[in-house]
View (cartoon, rainbow, N blue to C red):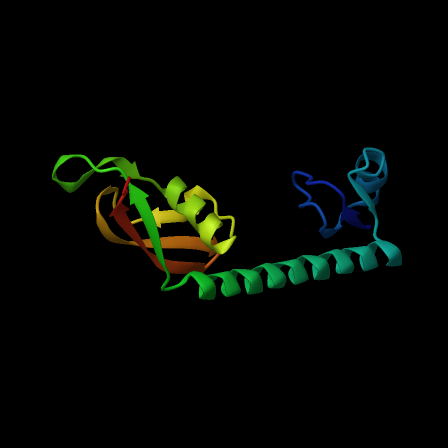
Length: 150
């Protein structure tokens, strides 16, 4: 019997898959526990629509990430920091601060874990930074750290 799985079922398949199982297994185990439903025309149509919807969502997110990468690539973020002796910073500039600056300047929410710095920023200067926007899509930008003026 062909059924569409409504949940992940160990040994049968993942949620949303169309699988062929024995009649007894489907009628006595899967259907009473609402783990699957019979693969009639309506169920198969819903399955196809869900798959197309997922593919469309991925395409839209990829296009948005590419547009954001175009906007960010080659840009320079200027960040200010307090200085100690010898031109060294008090503390360091973190990926969280870089993500907040991107949000302020470009109105683009970026997770701090997606901001990759080549090394810790503990002195003034310009540093390269990579921002991962989506699977396989990232943007390279520069972070320039200057001294805070009072």
